[in-house]
Amino acid sequence: MNEPQQVKIKEKIGYGFGDFASSMFWKMFSVYLMIFYTDVFGISAAAVGTMFLLTRIWDTANDPIMGIIADRTNSKWGKFRPYLLWGAIPFAAIGVLTFITPSWSQDAKLIYAYVTYTLMMMAYTAVNVPYASLLGVMSSNGDDRTQLASFRMVFAFAGSIFAFIMVDPLTNFFSHLGAVADPQTGWALTMLVYGVIAAILFYFTFAWTKERISPPAAQKTNLKQDFSNLANNKPWFILLGAVLSTLIFNSMRDGASVYYFKYYIESPEWSLFGLNFGLTTVYLVLGQASNIIGVVLAQPISKRIGKRNTFMYAMFMAAILSYVFYFLTVDQLGFILLLQVLISTCAGIVFPLIWSMYADIADFSEYSTGRRATGLIFSSSSFAQKMGWTLGGTLTGWTLAYVGYVANAEQSELAKEGLRYMVSFIPAAGALISGICMGFYRLKDDFMIKVNAELNIRRTGN
Image: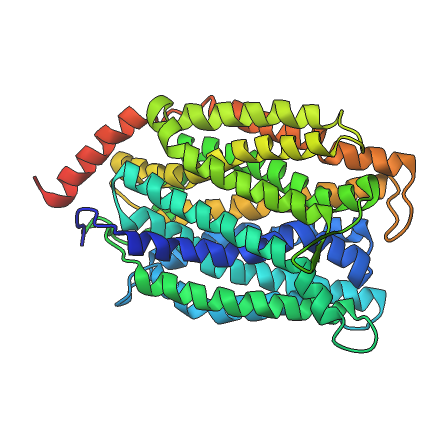
C-alpha cells in the first residue's frame, strides 16, 4: 500500500524514541568502551584497537545481510517494524554482557571481549538496520523525511546527553554499593539501567510508527539484481564515503576526549545538585546539546541552499575549527568549550541530512531501475556508522599505543602531544575528506522533486 504521507507528531516522536534508545548504547560504545577496556577491564590499547578492526570483517557482511532479510520480510506489521519488537530485549541484554568483567586471564579476557563485542554489533545491526530503513517507507515527501530525520537526531542527541549526564553518578553509585569500591559492578549495573530504558523505548517506536511505501507490486525477489543496482548507484558510493569520513571525525573526537581530559587537561570533578561530574562529561554534554542546535538548523538551511551544500559547508567548517583546536592549551578551557560548541553544531547539521539523503537514494534507485531495496540501501548507514566508529576506535587505540600511553599513570610529553592530535588534526582530516566527497554528490533537491513526482505517478497510476 502506498498512501500519501500522513505522519503525525505522535509518530515522529515514536520514531525519535528509537534513536534515543540506540544512542544511549552507541555513545557508551563510542566514547567509554575503549577506556573501559584499558582502564577497568585491563586490556592493552593496541589489542583493543586491533579487536575493533578485526571484528569488522564479519560486520561487513552482517549489515547488508540484515538489509536483505528485512527487505524480504512480510508480516502484519510490515517489513521493518517487527525487528524493533523482536530485537529489543537481546539488544539490551548483550549490551550489559559487553560491560561485564570476569576475573580471567589476559587471553581469556580478550576472547570474552571479542565474543561479546561481536554479538553486540550483531544485535545493533538487527535492530538499527530495520530502524534506519523505516524512514524510507514512512513517507515519500522530502521535507517530511527531513523532519523525521530531525526528530530522530534530536532524540538521538537527547539520548546521548542522558547517557553522558548519568554515567558518572550511576557508575559511582553502583560502584560503592559494597564496603569496597567495585567499578566493574558499577559499569555493569549502569548498562542494565540503560538496557531496560532502551527496550521500553524500542517498543514505543514499534507501536507508534507505520509503514506506507511498499516495493512495486510486480517486483520479484532478485538478490543478484539488487546488488547489481547498488553497485551501479554512484550517489550511494559518494554518500557512503562522506558518511564514513564524517563518522571517523566524530568518533575520534569523542573517543579521544575521555583520555584528553583525564591525562592532558587533568581537571578536577565538578559538583552539581550533589552529583559529581568530570569535565569530560561537561564537554560531551555540551557537544550533544550543540548537536541538537545543528539538527534544528539543518532543515531551514538546507531548504535555502540544498542538502548537498549544507552538508559540504558544515564539514569544511568543522575541519577548520578542529584544526584550530590543536593550538588551545590547558589554561584555555573557555575556548576549548567554545570550539566544542561550534564544531558540534556543524556536526549536528549533517546528521539529519544523512538519513534524508539515504531515503533519496532509495527513491533514485527505484526511479532508475524500477526496483526498490530500501533495507539494502539503508544497511549501508549501519555499516558506515559502525565502520566509522571502528576506524576511529582503531586509530585511537593504535595512536595511544604508538605514543606510549600507560593506563592510570602519568603520561609522557609524547603521549600528551598525541592526545592533542587525536582531538584536532586527525578528526579535521576526516571532516575535510567528507566535505570533498559531498562535492561530487549529484542528487540535488530540485531533481529529487521530479523523481518523487514520477514515482507517485507510477505508484498511483495517475
